[in-house]
Length: 110
Image 1 (tube, rainbow, N blue to C red):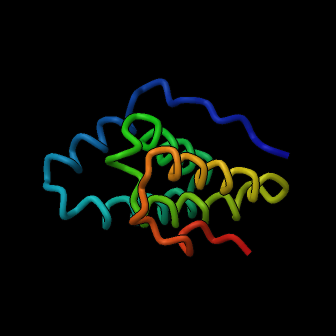
Image 2 (cartoon, one colour; image 1 turned 90 degrees about the horizontal axis):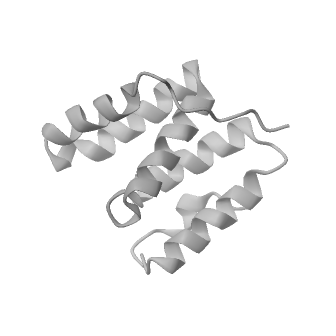
């Protein structure tokens, strides 16, 4: 059963993102990986919501291997019955934006 994905009322995800981007683009991959790990250990749904929010805001900027891999991993951990459908949706978005540099193994499809 899929849990509801509500937006945090305080906008803390956006504050974290802006602070990360201010530190430089080179830190983005590490920051997103660390966020995913933190969300996995504390709040999987918030991690999914945050990574999906980044992709929705700017797919060309945030559809990176590290984001796709971590989001698919969080899907595997939290949405047993619908994980494959969510991953296929991510693949479709990648194709729609012609992001050929995304490694297909990042989608963690079996």
